[in-house]
Image 1 (cartoon, one colour):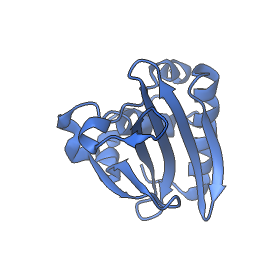
Image 2 (cartoon, one colour):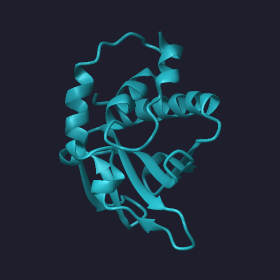
Image 3 (cartoon, rainbow, N blue to C red):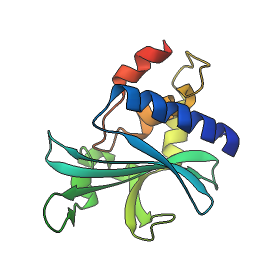
Image 4 (cartoon, rainbow, N blue to C red):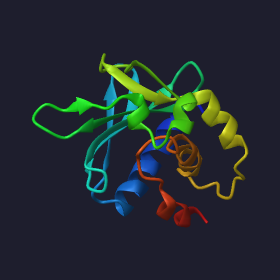
Length: 158
């Protein structure tokens, strides 16, 4: 799913608008920093009692979106969970790595963009509506993380 930077921006805006209209307690915010146009999500998961912090940022090396995330225990000083505890299960360890966040300069986990690209190619395209490409990508990218899978959004594109 290689996309140009301008197409990425259109897709991201449409994805965020659709997500925010459905999931009112978990709202993505769009932003610009340095050369990056991104979406950021930060919320307390009531089910798991964990803080989730995520970014969708275009990876210029691969021309694909990339999902960055951290998971914290709530408290006066937030404690970041290890990668093993930040993902859904250990079977996903090979899909995620840790690196310095592109513009925050702190450690963040990310989902391997090459694996996401390969898996996304296997999903049939059912819509040409703006935002669908990013939704399709997100369905794959979100699997190892503790973020919500956007099942309700898929109905908007069918």
